[in-house]
Image (tube, rainbow, N blue to C red; front, side, top):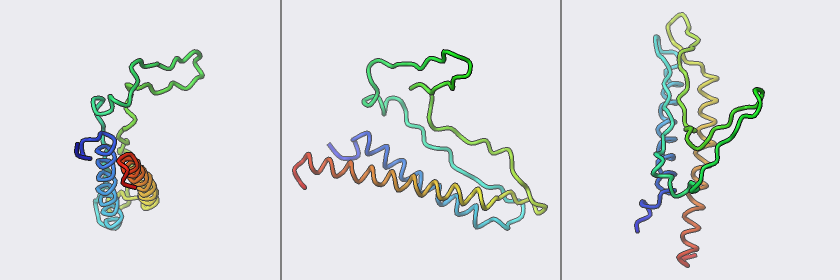
Amino acid sequence: MPISDIPILSMLRTRLEWHQERQRVLAENVANADTANFRPRDLSQPKFEPTQVAMATPATQVALAQTQGGHISGTGLSASTFRTESRGQYEVRPTGNAVSLEDQMMKIAANQMDYQAATALYTRSLNLLKIALGKR
């Protein structure tokens, strides 16, 4: 069985590729901070199909109950954790540019931390496979 067939490794690899592409898009936003009529772009997070995560989900699913109106409603297994951001509210300068350097730098920092976390998980998963095979 090739390593690419292991679901967790393929999902982590997809996630790493997404972070690399997002870094490129965010860098373009920063580079065009002074370009007239430029609107910042961002990538929506990858959605992993339930069939890909079917091995990780339990046989019985438990739903969270909201017993009082003041309780925060929980997200069940059916709700997607990856959502797109609303991009309708831009602070536009007189030149028509809508890039906020502060927002872009916050996104870049968060993207870097997420990339490092995914890289650490991928490395640890590979190390576990090496230990299981007796190669370490």
